[in-house]
Length: 295
Image 1: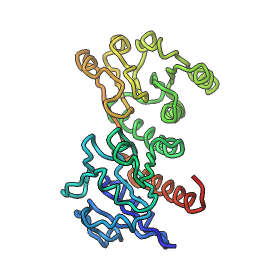
Image 2 (image 1 turned 90 degrees about the vertical axis):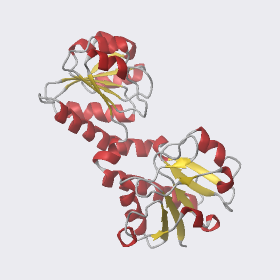
Image 3 (image 1 turned 180 degrees about the vertical axis):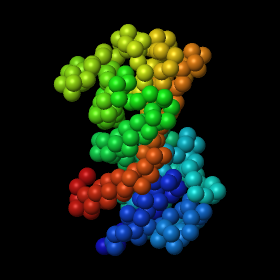
């Protein structure tokens, strides 16, 4: 049975996502917010947002950013203004998966009590773990660009040992860096030690930054504060991989002359093709599960 999927806006990784979906004979894609791309290139039917027939759609894919606080959708490949409203979602006539990277209070509220089934992809373990690979590679690339010394033997501290922090610590260690990981949970500190890395309780981070060359934050909370930055060597770098606004006191880092870079959405920047395929694979899997009656 053919499934019709509308893709509304998106960045470079969505080009690969569209390619992957179009490769399946049972999926028809309709794209809006891509009028700067040639239709033949994407292989999809281009349509203005206002012309979408919501009752015919089996799924909707929003940009990674979802909407802003006013419902506006980011359209990198179009000048078309697209905003989503409660009334728009109320036109859905059947339970319809709404894929987004992240959600927010506005998007949660306007989809409530409608047939929209909101699925924030970046909240899923599989997507986050897959994305942690290009994130780690992008961080390594930036470290090489912004330093005049090798990663091998450099002293790296990773704040956070979640899905991203684990991969980042592992990849830097594989390149010969002397990696420490700052984390809160005892089990994480134990796992860090088991990996042959140095475990640091997060509340003791400032006691260890005096000998740090590269400080990498993966925690979406204000954890790289003044005390931690104060003791960094003048040549040290901070890469903050957490979602905006990050977890670093950027103002204090600037006053201290420490270069601090907010590097969110690295998969879409350094490896959009890989990132797009990751999204497509997970969307296809979820649609297959739903078709089979799984949730």
